Length: 296
Image (cartoon, rainbow, N blue to C red; front, side):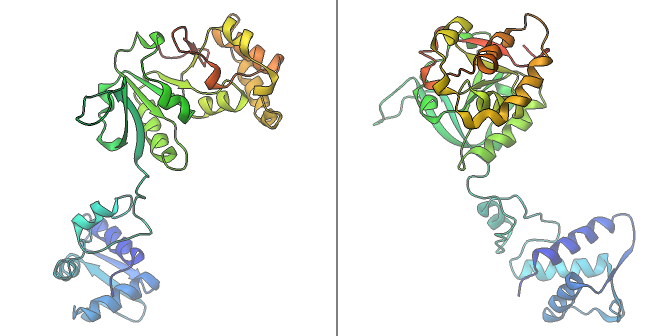
């Protein structure tokens, strides 16, 4: 019977503790009983280490456990299986820890990158690639563009002129249940660099709230005059009222003349919104800061 995740965690914590002490005493709880039963099954002699109330673990005992694990094709004590894919877990041994492994799509993002000619594939302006975000060198990009609507993500073939200050954009679909987790993790890593993060999505109460909650620094929108001409009450659903109080609080933090203020006046004052599909071609889009002070 393999060691459970609970027993492995106890041994891994002990391994760390033994770097600063010669022995660790553990009371005989469930995890300790699993370790004891496993050691006995592998003919590892516990001797005086085991008493009625506790198990003493030392460096020599852990070495014997690691030897037995290696003989069984199991990962070593120090191996952390949590967060690894099933393939990465397999590289460490025969153990598949489904409960703690990374789900197949957990680290995946859907990226829009300049197209590469491939034999037998019609060439378009951009390729849409399913990637593990850990394989992306975020330092190679100077702006993150978060696209909310999947139809609009696929339809975005060129780079809008508004992105010209940033010649190396990383354009990603924000994601649904398939890609949302990977994008969220990437966005958190991106925010640490304090580089611009642009949100391209529905101009409604929920959309702007998503941008703010996701630490976006700017919105990518048509000019205010265009939004004012096209926005309508039908594209600001009544069920989004719950988002509006927080947006009013945010609007109150903006200084006079802030570029976002006019847009929020349409949204909150006139109760009109504009879905991303009605933004137009992108030739006239502008970058609108979300906060009173933001990165450029």
